[in-house]
Image (cartoon, rainbow, N blue to C red; front, top):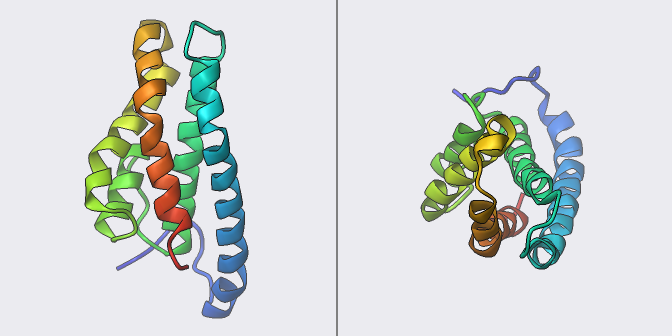
Length: 146
């Protein structure tokens, strides 16, 4: 049985809201994807705020995942990591994206809750290598016919 945290909407309401929400999510996602190369260049060296911008980019992906989960009436995710696992299980995302996206959500949690214990070099490495996970997520969501 599929369900979400919000009250159930009627089919007519979903037909009106889903296209608009999907369009807004696609636009937001395109904005995030557009700035990914910029973020990587700016934060290639030591720069204040790089953790913040990385957290924001990951949270955008989590928010979009949760929006899809709610709009499709899937079960409520246990945590941010489960949000990506659910989209893979439901066939929204390819199975090979599960592990990198779950790692991305865990890394975000570490940045937010244990920020003093995160090495700047690890963030630099993620900005060089891990941004493709965000881009792949964006392409999978934006390329889907809703």
